Length: 312
Image 1 (cartoon, rainbow, N blue to C red):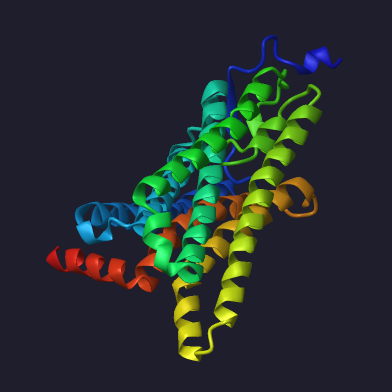
Image 2 (image 1 turned 135 degrees about the vertical axis):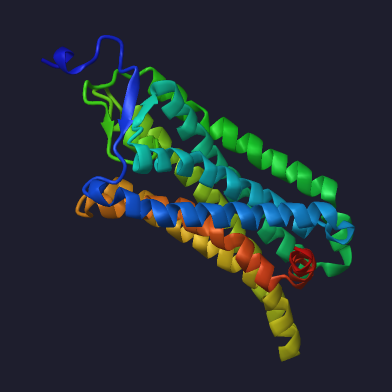
């Protein structure tokens, strides 16, 4: 009986079903998807354009903003075009290789973004706790190397996920109740023993998020201690204000990610359409808001963006 539930050599394609239970509203749901994606592209490409054009912005902080912008563009672009094809044209098929490729890039981008947020926390730590050595500790070359380390870490940790999935037999039921190929959603399509896949997926998330949140927490713990040593309340506000944008972006990214990941693994009582919508909002809202947050909170960037937008 078990053998009859398997395709002879695995399915040639999966079917991404969109948002289960809300198929009739797909057209309406596509409107915020499209708007969020357009704002994401405009905002993040504006950051990349302005920083590349302005010599005065060729500094570690703005180099990190460019890295964050690239991960925001990558994460949103991995998901939204295929989701819109599902919503608009009912193009639901995706090849197994295409599904695993999407899954790899999606999780690799998320892991890279986490590394960028850690580096931003380190940047704020040096700026507040050791400002006199800031320019010697955090050079553009060193920031670039840290970004490459984060990218390499992401690839090495995420690459085994699709490779482990490739060895599994898949059930004849090819329908994935999702708008994109998320790791656990694809694991659930297998009729084989998925304990290794589930364990590795959980361990990867714990290693990446656990280590990164620990480093960020350590950085901000040291920042708070340094700020408390300052007697002037005005200096307190000025020091903490330099961290506001990063704290907002960090809370937005990690909170939405953890909520989506935990509901996918442990939220069996949550309605499927609620979970899928939350999983999509995690990939849509932070990339849209990140350039806005930094544009508002970072005066140098705000002034330069204003200069270019006034010319249009």
